[in-house]
Image (cartoon, rainbow, N blue to C red):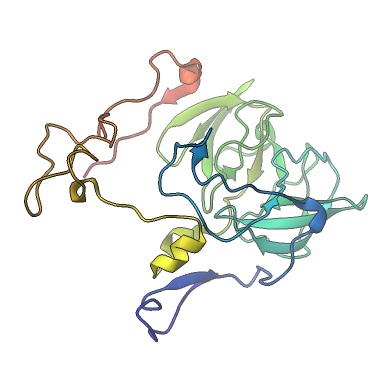
Length: 279
């Protein structure tokens, strides 16, 4: 895998880069039976904008991903590694012995013709999926279930992975990238290895048009607005915030405000809180 930087032929191409992986089959058409329609909501819920800066973009179809991988103890063969426009990680098309095909998230280093397996009989090797109690302590895992048979919930984006730090009876401890240590059932399933496309964050978009193709609309700074439009707006020239604390366009505190519920049900599963990054 490598980052390809384009020649500086135009202003838009200057510093633009993409991820080029030898394992990925670019230009391959997706499996037709594993596609579904994807309606563009443009960040709206009941007609009102709930997520700003969304809209437009290229028309896409959703690839149906098997997050549960409940084809237990049936070996499958990777037919192809593909790029998914709906997610940062690469996906793998797996063909099973009974003729069924499914998409799964590809792990780092996964290749065409590799054999993958899910279940208690799966060998401990990258790309295979099994229960946490069967995985050696200290292994980097991904696509982790928080509750048995729920399907992958944690570590699904490009390059992400968590460390299995302890397995004690019915419980296991995992250490997330944020530093948080969390308790899960040892019956939960996880995939061995980190998710593919770890260089995703190193890509330079290069021009505004490329972002628009992704369905992202322009973002305007609050300090560039008028006071009627944003708490940071107003003033002659380049002004500071002018308030005690930074605020959102709706007047809510933007930095340092705790948003997690005090008595959330999952508090009992958190052994150690995430560490705060020092500036």
